[in-house]
Length: 226
Image 1: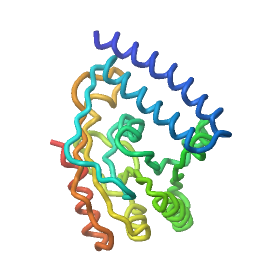
Image 2: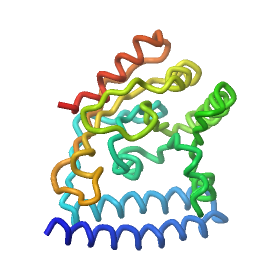
Image 3: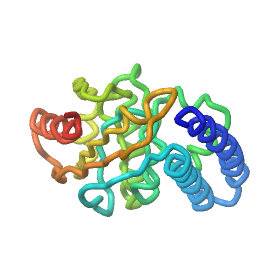
């Protein structure tokens, strides 16, 4: 049954994704609000497929605060990346620049609103990310980042990427750490049924020393590791 559920999930989700992302590209002339609505439907479709075909339920512990903030999310699988619009109101993701080479992604991401992350360009890349982040935060949109930089195994605690502290300092907005335990269920070819939990951490105010904010974020995003 597990394999059959997975085959049904892959078939439904990827066919639906192709249609929805194509719609997002075609919707660009109608404005960013329409594109955001289409991307919201893509995330919703993913949640439907995960719930009804894979048997994955989602639990949220704590409240997601409204308004602009830098949401620092644990990254164990693609689940939380695709699911972000289900957790936040029109979130702005900080996404690896390599993703922008995917056909249709660059056009859709530009219309939706996202921040490319170039790890090999140092201070220049950080300035560009801060500029874009300030723009979207001024619109009241939440910013979503994976501070460890990439997907990590459940239970692993790699150091945060150096750029995270720079963004925190220069954006001067609160940080909300979020733990998620999607890895054991979702980060494998044959995904398992069960419950994926988001644990919303305590909001961290701007202006703290680097060591303190990094320590608090690290502890909070790893709260579901055990």
